Image 1 (cartoon, rainbow, N blue to C red):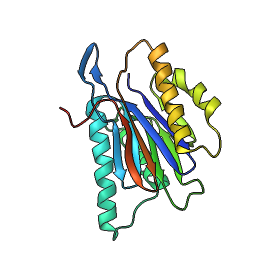
Image 2 (tube, rainbow, N blue to C red; image 1 turned 45 degrees about the vertical axis):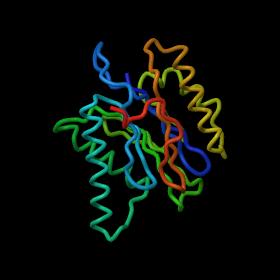
Image 3 (cartoon, one colour; image 1 turned 45 degrees about the horizontal axis):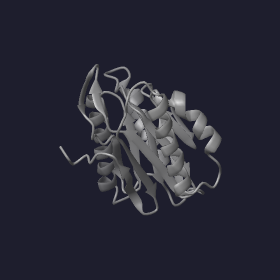
Length: 202
């Protein structure tokens, strides 16, 4: 039942997820942060069972930090990070698959638009996209993104697209996802733009 959005714009990407941690008919918490920071200029929104979500997010994050420490501070590009994630998902398929779907976004100075976005599923497929949605939200929101996304979007316009998607879910989706968290990745790094429930408040 998780929801993950990603929209790229001229200068960065916007990532958003719901904050609900639930299983079957039981809700455990409504302030979960499902957007994991991978480096100073990249993050990934993850959907899936909470155990796999936390396990895979931390596994990828710590291995990318280890790579940076082992290679004299050299950071991987967003493209390289996405391919590493895809490789780990594919490798786990025949052992113990991670039931996670991912939208990974980051900022690279060498990229013409600055921001780049990659959409991955638990089977290990990976595609670079201008926007994406994971979970049931894709049934409601991909048409909104397709209509409203355009070359040269500003950060405010990208955030408005995501907010429009959240509003549509509130009206159309059977399940109430009351809390969302939005993060922006740009040349300044990763920052939280909106947070309906503080993840630190447990």
